[in-house]
Each structure stands twice: as structure tokens, then as C-alpha cells.
Length: 110
Length: 112
Image (cartoon, rainbow over all chains, first blue to last red; front, side):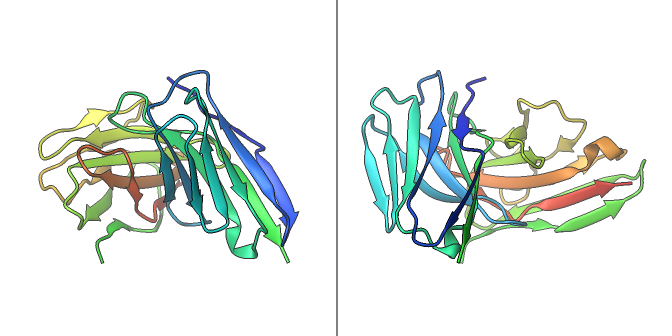
């Protein structure tokens, strides 16, 4: 099983602060995906990164795929309370389904 | 709007009961999945399907069974529920050549 380690596990910040969360593996992934999950809901896909070194931006969220395709990061600029949720990274070990990390639980307070 | 639906959202049942968790999608996706999620733990794949009449067990051993008689429908059945089955069950689907998953809202199952 290709494991995905996410850090930090929990993060509590105030509105307006910047933050970065990480997703690391000892294995190479053909792609990595980031999902956000709100309490009582299923995960929602935010982005897929495919190429080593790739950077994708989604409004205030910046996603980066490591050059060796073993790690990824998510940076949020000027966090808002609406960013609160569980951020999950996931990758396809063999193409048929996804392996998920345990997630980073983010709380943004006013 | 195309979507994926799970029912019920919440279920509390007694030990030994048979239950079926429903999952339907309107996106025409060939691949469907069931994941189990416990607090603080990663999502674990318990079943998946490539299409009609195709079902496979996932990485996490599960006493549940699934069927795929129609493309849009992927129900999960527990013949005899036990307290160890208490968990959140998430259904998802994706296009055949993709792993980008669309998830339902989940069923939170409590077995007492």
C-alpha cells in the first residue's frame, strides 16, 4: 500500500493568516488530488496535479506537486472562515481507486 | 445537476439486523466505490466496481457485500450488523479513465 502522510494533523488559525499543509509519500504517484471535506459531508475534489513541479492556483489556494512526484503542498493565502474543513490528499496506487491520507483538519476563526 | 446520492444519511440499528445502504449516481460513470471513514483515520476502500456485473473487494477487509446490476446503482449490504460496523460509509464514482472521484454525502451507521 502506498501511504500518504499529511501534516499537520490539526491547524487552528485566525482569519487573514496564511498556511501550508503537506502531503508526503515514499512512493511515486502518477498524480495527486486534493479534496476538502466539511462535517457531515463527502469529500469534494479541489484539484488534480499530474506533472512533477506543477503549480495550480484556485483563487486563494495554491497547489504544488513535487518534482519527484512523491509529495504535494497546499498553500492558502489570507484564510477565511469558509476554508474550515478537512483537507485530504489522495493518489491512485494502481489506477483503479484512490489511497487517501488521514487529512489536515483546519479551523479558521474570525 | 448530475449528482451522487446516498440513503439513508443516518441509521441506528440493532445488532444482527440486515441493512442495505443505497448509492445512486446520475453521471453515467462506469466506476463506483465504497469507502469507510472513521474519525481521525484515512478513507479505506472496501469495494469497487468497473461497471455492470463487476465487483471487487478493496484493501480493507469488510463483511459487507455489493452488487452492480445497473450502471447508476451500487448498493452495499450487511447481512448481520455488529457494533464493529459502526462507521461512516462513503460512496463515490468516477469516469472509466479517471480516478477523480465524486462523493455522496455519506451514511453514518451506528450499530447498537
